Image (spheres, rainbow, N blue to C red):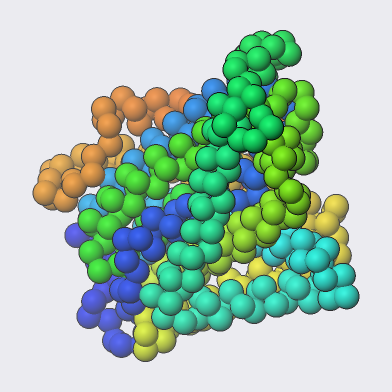
Length: 469
């Protein structure tokens, strides 16, 4: 069992081999969290949730966001006490054993590099619509190259790049909320106060009952995946413990506010049954209040959101696989870093698999890539469950060995940790009742089973080698 006191990024490591850089500032961490979560899932995918839950989608987001908030609080507690670039993978190894760290790390890395393909392809589709003369594959190559270069530079430069990309998204949401509020109150030209007609009419606040809210939860719960990057990146800040505490506190509340406030504006201004799945409800609102070229404006916002998420996810993937190599769970060659502390081989390995995923998405989107996407669809639930179980065990150890490190504490421990695990079990049970979600769950369970089997085999070999000595 790895002890809490064992360093993760050894400061005594030889220069150019294992020591990561320390150039991220507090504002970089906060925007990384926002950049990893606010994407096409909010701007476009939220339409599917509204279509099944109506105005009750706000309750769906409250449940899903509350669960994500609890998970991040648990993760923040462990990361503030013992910062590590491998974040929850390292914590799982310390708390549960090598099999848990191996499984969490590799599943999360696989999730990220598959999602890279979705983001790169989505951004390329938008860019191809603007400049049809440039083929979609060329746009993908440009984006992947640009963000590979971004991730190969000093971490401070990467953080600054991501800060401004994420700032554009946040600015767009703030502007949308401002315009929406003015339209609701009738302050905008040619508008009148809308009142509560769309919240209480068209079947009421819960037009499809609590079943609609439940289906809404399944539609939105996975959009909160990506917040974990805050705790991964904190290890490369000047004061990891303090930075991760502040970033977790601020990022989660801001994201929850942006999500729920956006949904409130949308379902107040529009009849919920006017929202179409697959179409952006944000575009529909901007059209309704008379904003010219609303569709193109949102195309730009979604484009930036996809690129920002691509950048953040490539960063997370490279740090996760570097951390796995650091613990002997990935090829040792991935340990080498540049003089500036950038794990370049880990970046290149992650982007290489990302390119493979893109090709699979371009050539076999409905077969091979669809299977891969299903295989990672519910992986974040597995990761969240490991975070909760790890926190249950780590909290007692930290209290016993280093109580002064508990600068960020989980609320109402252990009751809310158990409540979060119960909520995850509820989501799994709900997924089993939905045909589409059940397929994702079963594929993801299969992927997890394969990784767990590999981890178990490695564990047996390690024990055998130990016994032979």
